[in-house]
Amino acid sequence: MNIFSENKDFWGNAIDSRRSVRSYERTALSLETIKKIQDFVPTVKLPFSNEVKIVFFKTRENHSLANNLKKPPEDAVAFITDTSNFYNVTAVGFVGQLVLLYAQGLGVSNCWFGHYFLDEIEQLVPDIDNIKGANRPRFGYGKGKVDGVHAVCVSPLGYFKSDGIRAKDRITSSFISFKWKPLDDLLLNGIKEISLPDALRTAFNMARKAPSAANTQHWRYLIYSDNKTVEIRLTFDTCLKL
Image (cartoon, rainbow, N blue to C red; front, side):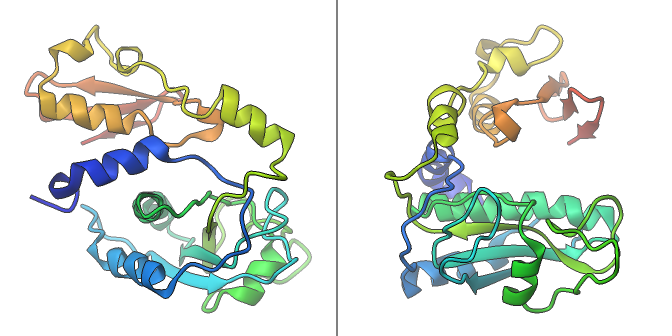
């Protein structure tokens, strides 16, 4: 048993309700809520080593965190690692998504921002390396391999503000968010959802709702005959065997 199998309803509800939120109330999270999220962080265990550090910080009112986040909530979180190691950067996705899903389960809205304003984050987040020189990027920590300890991405932590939401976000919510492909469309080699054991069906139905840019869902699943080994194949020819 683990934290996921012990509380399927919590995680199922968090996954089903998750959406990328860019319009927030300027309301601080309660100390109890922040502590719950912070206490959850050490429970995240991955099957590979990593050096991901999670830092909670306060934003500055009327200071944008990103182009699509002009008015952030009071609280936010940064996912930091040594970006010279590709596997560390990859691990941020695994660790960060679990933390943000847990926050969602507590009713806290969030959204990944890798394209954040670098000047602002370097002022607000401790223990990251400042980027200097003529090639200093404006957003994020730069493209390609960048040595040093940096915030791979940040996320606001707050409560959804319905009024004032951008037209683009209204369209995204209506026509893209929650429009997941049927599981049968994601299974390879003619495998159908109805043929899967209950445990696999539940796992894959949660996995198919993972966030992706514009909800493109660019992953496919190949299930081996032992019903234990799974290959995750991406539509751009990357393969991860579990």
